[in-house]
Structure formats: structure tokens, C-alpha cells
Length: 556
Ligand code: GDP
Image 1 (cartoon, rainbow, N blue to C red):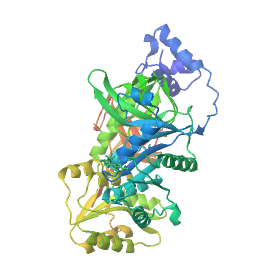
Image 2: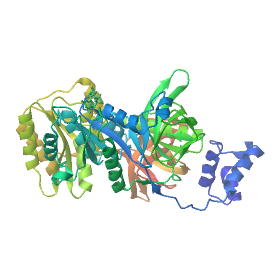
Image 3: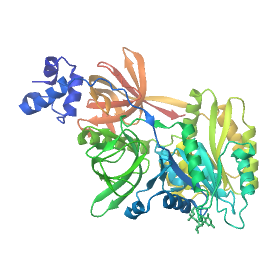
């Protein structure tokens, strides 16, 4: 029996039945005569299962997740330890043999979750992956030292992430402590303290003497309350990897923070490069648990590899499906490697065209404080009503990893004036598709940015048709999308190229050739006269008879 025959019997469309066949793990069986009665029964069970009446999701308040950021040695680690020491019962602390990258405390019968201080580099690296775990940043500033370069970086990174900042002025026990000076400095960075008429909550603490800890926690809860954080434990699972390590005996461990839904032992989860069945869940105290709801960090065992920080995990129904998803995202990553330069001028301009107010995000690094100020002032002067120049971060010194990650996470262009970059960071910039423009003359920067703002930088493009394919069959594959079984009629089809979909000679959609397969195998290109499966990013409504036209735009 063929798929369509069985589909007819069940009063389903072939594509719907195909979905079910894949779901029960019988992918690739278009001829069903070979199916055992047991397999048919499995399919029937799914077909005739009553659709679960849509449950109303229970959305409930979610506990806040906090990250400490600030200059090195200002006391982030000590402060976090002080909070744990004073707020976690002795016997509980005793049980902790291994840190999992996050911890929880209970204060005034409310939970607060702390991510182990990762530094703003890691904070932004996660964001570059598309994940945001932090609800509130606590900016730790030593009262004797005041705002330092990394404090400024931390402020810029938190701002770019649109995460509210709460300030902890630390080391107030020190003789050299000068709280007023810190507050004055804060006003310069648009973080004027509440007591000075501003909006920023500042708490004075001494991590060393455990002074001000309760006040800090109270303020965290207050800020969290204002944010009205909510999530549903019944929602579809979304969990973000925050840490991972390889255990020689037990295999890869990853700490996931559940954002919504509930993670349970036995679940099959999939991220971008990692997947697996959750064999065990270990909470932050090192105890085994059965499940973890929103805002809960858990260490899990059972994944295929160590989860990459920032990797977002979802629940799927089979390991097969998980593997398909991982394969697909690997394909996408490869593509990204091929098609570099998403945050190039061209891409920035494309984005700007769609937005009403055009915003050019910049990160400026310069050799001296004087040149930096002159440059930033001059660039700000270029701003017009609908053309904003947003300097996300400015600093003296070479272009660092954190600058590149920030650019990647926020879609910024990096301008370097009279400074260098080490080759390792150059490679990272390429990988993250961040454009860095280096200059030795200020007016040349001004000239170029002016051109960018006027849209004059757009290179003149010329179009060439690469090939055409006719759609002969449509497959809808869960989690993967629509695949058009096609025949190459002209030229060739190349993965990563732009495509438009023609129906009776009219353009009905556009996108990018995202996946390309010859039978089951991934292919970079498919030549004239061959059959292939085509997946298009940005268009899923292909139909039988459509023509997929692949073209390339090149600079003249
Ligand atoms: P981090 O780099 O921001 O994590 O800073 P640490 O927590 O490692 O602290 C750096 C140094 O400052 C350590 O020697 C701490 O003992 C010291 N320190 C931290 N908090 C305080 C404080 O409140 N008062 C004093 N006097 N020293 C502190």
C-alpha cells in the first residue's frame, strides 16, 4: 500500500500522514506494504488519538535571574559568596560538592536565582546566540576604585541587552571608600541614583562584612516585581545552556536554565548542536530531581555533547526528530560560514530600509581618550532626525573579543581608530560576521559614516540567474518545514543562494535556498537534469508546478 492510499483510508492528506509516519519513527517508508501490523497499529493510534482540547496555559509569576557584572576585583565573587553564605542554610551548603554555574536562594519566601559571574564577555556571547537568561544585572562597583573601564563595558553590554541595571556599591568598609564619588560618576553614565533624583537603585554593601546584603536582596525583589516576570510551567519547554563540562566517567554535563515550560527526566531535548534524552537532573545543591520549572537551573546528563553556552533547548518527541534538527542547524551553520558578512554595511543598510527610523549601531575603539571623544562627538553631529547614530560602546585600546560579541549580538559596526586587533579576534569577527573598519584619519571615518547614513555606500548590484528547478512534489516535515521535491531544468541550484518562486510566471515569494538534498544526502549544488529536495528560508508555501529560480547579486 502506498502512502496516499493509506492516507485516503484515514481521510487525511498524504503530507499529514507522512508527518505521522515520521513521528512514529518510520521515516522513508513510502511503500507501506512492508509495514508490520504492529507498525500500522502505531500509526492508527496517532491518527485516531483525539486532539487534546487546547488547555489554557497557566501563566504564573516567575522568579528573577540575576547576573553580577563589573570591573575585575570589585568584589563580584565575594558578594555572591556572601549572599550564599548568609541566605543558604548551613546543611544545604554542606551538600554542595560541585557548582553547576548557578545557584538559588530564598529571601522573604521568594526565590532568587544567581548566575555565577560570567563576565560581560560570556554574558554577551550568550546573547550572540540569541539567548537571554538574565533579568537584572547587578553592577558591582568598588567604592574605593569607582567606575573603571570594565564597569563601563558592563554598563554598555547590559544596556545593549536591554536588561535593567541595579548598582551595588561595594567595599564600603574600606577607609578609602568614597560613595559620593561613585554616585557622581554614575550620573555621567545616565545611571543617576534615586536619592539624587535619578532612577537607578543603588545599594551600599560590604561583601567582606556581609553588610547591606538584605537591602540588596530587597531591592532585587522590588526591581523584579516591577518587571512582572511571568512564565508558564505548562508551556513548550525553552531552556538555555549556561555552562557545561565533560566528565570522563559520566560523559557530557550541561547546566540548563529553564525559561519556560518544565524539563523532566526522560524528555528528549534538542538545541543547535546538541541533543539527547535527559537521563538525570541535578539541582544546584547537587540533589537529584525529577523536574525543573521556569527560572530553575539544572545540570543534566544524557546529551550528545556539552551544550554551548547560550544554546537554546526545546523538547521534541523522538531522538530521530532531534537528530534531524541538529543536522539542519549544522547545515545552516555551514551556510553561514559560506555566506559571511551579515553585519556588513550592506546588511545594515538593508535593515535600515525596513525601519522607519534609521539607526546605525556603532562600537568605537580609539588610541587615546582625546581622539575617542573627538570622534564620538563628530559622529553624533552627523545625526539627523530620522538617521540616528547609536554608539553602543566606546573605549580606548585594541578591539577585543567582548567588542566583537557585542557587535554580533546587537548588529553593530566596529570602528577602530589608530588601533590594532590580534589575528585571533579578527578570525572571531569573521566567524561572527562582524565588520570592522580601521582608520588612521578621523575625517575619513566621518566621510564614510556620512555616506553610510545617506545610503551612498550601497554597492551597485547586478543580477545573474544561476538556475531553475520545477517543483514536482511537496513534503511537509515537522520541525524542518516544507521541502519541495524538484527537478533542475536549467543551470544549477546552489545552497545559500537567493531564490524566487514563480507560479504561472508571477513571483509569489522569495527566500534563500536553505537546504538542498540529493536523495537523503546534503549537497552544495545540484546540476541540470537531477532531482533534489529544496528547503527555502523565508517561504514555505511552495506548490506543485512552481518554478524556483536561483539568482545571484554581485557587485558591479
Ligand atoms: P571579582 O573579580 O569582582 O569577582 O572580585 P573578588 O570577589 O574576587 O574580590 C576581589 C578582592 O576584593 C578580594 O581580595 C576580596 O576579598 C576583596 N573584597 C571583596 N569585597 C570586599 C569588601 O566588601 N570589602 C573589602 N575590604 N574587600 C573586599
